[in-house]
Length: 160
Image (cartoon, rainbow, N blue to C red; front, side, top):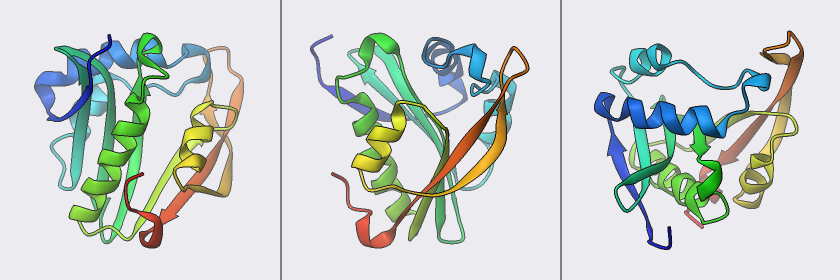
């Protein structure tokens, strides 16, 4: 996997590949992953888009987002473990920034499980922690995990 990362707009036909990425990227013990039906139900809604990261012909990551009323939300972002550390997550985030600007967003936000390694990337690319949702994620074993709310404003939306 030494090829460049390509980001393409995705759709319902990409859901099997997206679900494969999600199943390998999200540890089921934390309860962060979505089901295929949840993703499929959201994709046709106005303002929702799916971006698929590929190396060659292989899907190695994805981002699911939505924009409405000047705000964009990153709903899901995942990168296959064997593709992590290769700039896939950063490429997906930069694509999210550009697409959000195109859709008129001046404020971006996301939620992430407290303790998730992705927080380092989000803060490095300009997101700030603005809140906490207690017991947001329900793990497989019944344990609950907090979510951190992160935000980024239009002044810092340029891709990095």
